[in-house]
Image 1 (cartoon, rainbow, N blue to C red):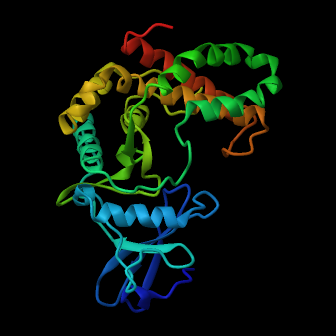
Image 2 (image 1 turned 30 degrees about the vertical axis):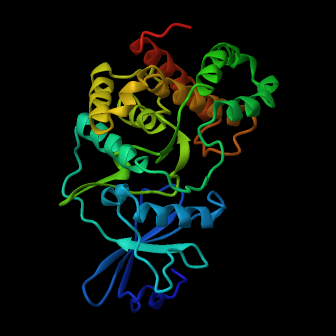
Image 3 (image 1 turned 90 degrees about the vertical axis):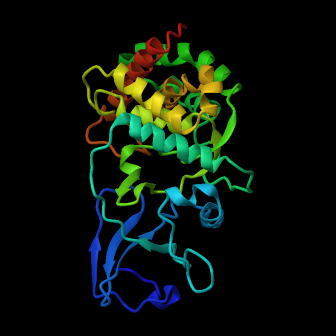
Length: 314
C-alpha cells in the first residue's frame, strides 16, 4: 500500500494504515505506530505535480519563514529532506477540534498567512507555471473556441466580452507568494489555532489570488456544478474582506485590484471549464456530457454577481 522505508523518518513499520478520503489529487493515509503516534502519510501525484524538487524547496523555505507557525510542517527525513524517491512524505496527524469557522476568521487567517509568507524575500520556486494566468487560459480557449456547439453561443459571447477586462487586470496585478488553494477545507483548527495544509501549490503568483479562492469557495451560494443560478452572498464577501485586511493590512492599499480578483478567478475558471468542454472533456472528471458546460455557466453567473458587488461595470 505504501512503498517507502519508514526508517528514513526514524520510524518503524506502522501497525495500521487507514486511507484518508477527501483529496482529489494526492494519495493519503493515516499511519498508526506501536508507540501510539499517528502521522499523516501522503504521496504527491507526479502526474499533476511534475517538479517535486520545487515543492521540496518551497516546503523547506516555508519551515524557515515567519509563516511556519501557521502550517503543519512535514517531518524531516534523517537526511534533512522531506520526500522520498517515490514522492512520499509524512507530517504530524492533527486532530481538528471544530469544523465551523466564521468567514471573518477564515479571512483573517489567510490574510495573516499571506502577510507572513511575503514578509521577507526568499527564492520561492514555481510549481505550476501560470497557474492563475488569464492570458494562458485565453490562449488555450482560442484553440478550441470554434468547436463550441451553437447551444452555448451565448455563453461563448459573454466569456469573450469579459476577456479585455480581465486580461487588462492581469497586467496590473502585484506579484506575491500565495497558497493558490485557500479555502476552509485547507485549514485545520487545532488546539493551537488554525493551520494551513495542502501546501503543494504554494508558489509565486498574484496578490489577491488567495482572497479570490476564499470568496469562490465560501461566498458562492451554490456549488460550482449546480445548474441553478449562482451568485455571491454579499455579507460573506464583506466579512471575508474585513478579516483578510485585518490579517494583512497592506492588501487594503491594493483594494482596487484585489477586490476584483474573485471575479477574475471565477472568469478564469469558467473559461477553463468551457475550454475542456469544447475540447472533449479531457481534463475535468464529468458525470454527464454537459457537465463542464454547466460548470462554465455557473462560474460565469458568479462573475456577474461579483462584479456587481464591486460596483464594476463592463
